[in-house]
View (spheres, rainbow, N blue to C red):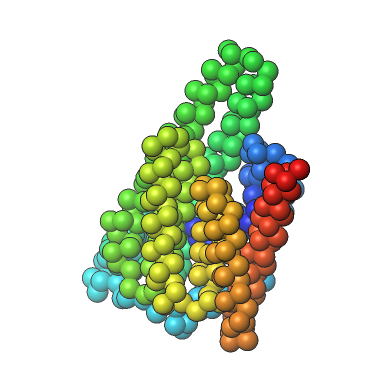
Length: 331
């Protein structure tokens, strides 16, 4: 299997084969070329990406500017916080604590700070939204990496027939799955009870529904039976809700709309095992963006064209996979 590109809940693209992009991240996840079982890819220092909070799409490669970083940007115009000075001070302090935790790479504490901000039931600023997203992405990312390593080891041990070690590996995998489920349910609870209800702008609504789809997709990655079916259905509903709003509120070239199309198509390909629908969705998003490329602002140009390239990369990969399957059937 080749290199599948995906946008994180906060918007940053991930390469599931190499895991590398942008900034340093020493725990990058990937699927080995030619294999179905996942594994961890170690990336050289500086070659991988910690999901950072400095962008509307979350973490662009160095040098890319984001329109939504600008407080004067239309997409940054959000509902005002409560007028209570003490509440505003608490909010500012929590945001600063989250920034400190991010710099120290203490993402569990970053999650707690931003979860408290989200619980204030006001629409988050672009910066706050990305801080929350980045915090959860890094917390869940470490566990997803662990799960893939353990699953790969489990498969190898099954091939060897080593029952004693296999039992230990399976128990360890279940421990990681319990942590994954807890994190996913935590952010999904925040989204349902606070963020989606408080969202005012179309951009923020798409962002949160996309995020909801992503975390249900993460649950579907390791769940089995009815649990997997339920997670996949919930993910599909959330992605469709995000898509319905994006079609009306956001232009085809908007980075969040493009990122949604990228992740939604990956969901079709990897979770629903539907390459036809994955290709159709990705191609439509790419073609619609191409048609309006000349209307892009300078601030959004790099962001949008980057994601469009990822859509095209996946289309190339998926089309070749489908062609190979057809060829094998014919032979």
